[in-house]
Length: 475
Image 1: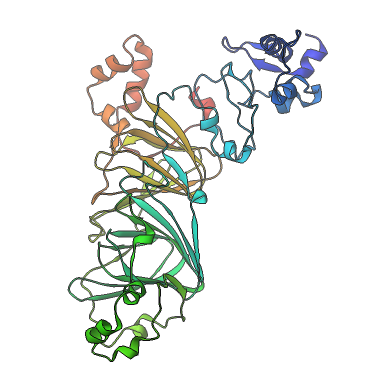
Image 2: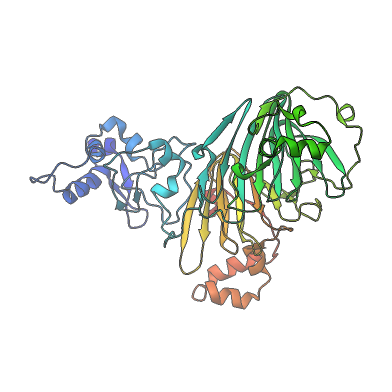
């Protein structure tokens, strides 16, 4: 091979591991576009490929770049387009082409498996991803709120989520909901107050990783504590929930005649002439004192425990991370919401599994991950997730969560409208099924592969987050 061929680099040949000079790839592409005739000029992206200087061959045609026409990967390995600063293009194993029209490259980098799906994706599975970055933000005095409901994400049928921020001293006013409210503190500190059906009162100060749960109809309030206030994720046990439909104290009083207010509180009606004329919703309040100092004279301690310290739980250690599960077994009041907190280490995977009792509503807090959802009848679709993204997996649909990065962990909440967390592990199921039956299902005509596979699953040990060896070790 002469030096010019070497300078242009080489691409993996479609047949095995043979390599062919890049210029042959370009000639092949050129013939497809009839560049030697009078056909219309190819799009700008293709022209760029044809005009690549020899000194730039590594950038455009490196065997490590999966988004070029000559790249081959029959195994659909993960691609961290954000971490590796790659720009996805719809090329896969010799098929596809460039994008001629307008592009949002930032979105494409965040969703590489939509731009270039795995070859195993098939069918018409609906969208299972939404980002809070795309949700409308309601801005109030000292805070804001945004939501992800069935209106934003039609597959979010069982649960709805609200992301809320309160600065120091800012109050989410006294209110209640038709739905139960579950919450996870994302940052800062917050004080909650609540009343139970027996007239018992509850107050507590919470911080990052803590939970609260208010059954439907239970009145409560939230207030940011100093110096930076708080931010939290609220979950409601109905996908059709709307934050606008909350029952607010000031809204009710504003829509009740002052004569009735006077009768109810045994005060002259004129006492109420200066009450707010509309809801306050989120507003700046004064900084509270200690819980002891704030308790009213008629305070009666509730027998209910409305809060729980999730991150303080002893985690389940797995080969690829940590798992903490909170449901009615260790947080008894939480009868309609169960959750798991996962720390997925770099080069690890939340094993292939499914949930028999509820849809999964995932909230990604750190890292980058891909999830392939298997929906039966040959349907499967892959989605990519990053911080602030919401994912849905309908009940009983098989899936996994794969960390895309080799150096950053993934932190995610799996949340369910259920009183208990339940899942089935594919690994455990096959390991506890007769070996002959497993082999005849998957490796009937390959005894060596069957032997290797059966040896791997013989322990049948569930490992919720699995450490994945280096790809070279798996080859």
